[in-house]
Image (cartoon, rainbow, N blue to C red; front, side, top):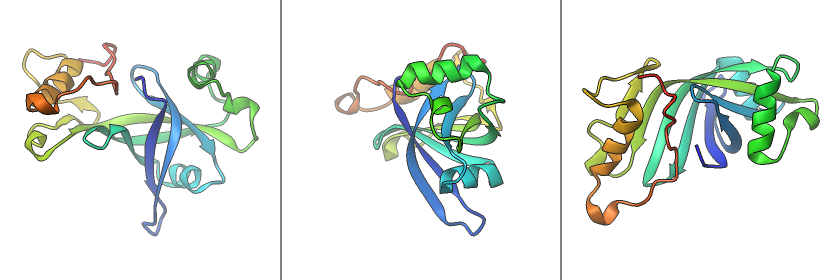
Length: 167
């Protein structure tokens, strides 16, 4: 994925929402985030493990519903920390000690655009790609986006779904 940041939506136990942009790294199967365990997003992820991520722009969004698992900097695989730091030029492992990492496993993936694109927008459910006969999941996302009227099509910079996605 080429975006630098992702919108991260969480909620506390009372349902109070929290929406923030965070840097991320996509490893081909999961999204990695880093934030302080003392801020609302970190607390919400630690307590519920539920998250929604929005990649892209308002009329061209990939929405991921996922489950998050917290790892301390000591538990984080070195190659993941190195990849996160290389992508964004910032290494949370060298920042404030309250920074922790979250491994987000996608459960549902939806492509959002305009009303005419709503049919067939769910591409993954319960962590499994929905059948699109003869289509690799990345091709399914491209096919969904190609249903846009020609005047609404644009070059998509996000989130080019990795060919490493399971088929």
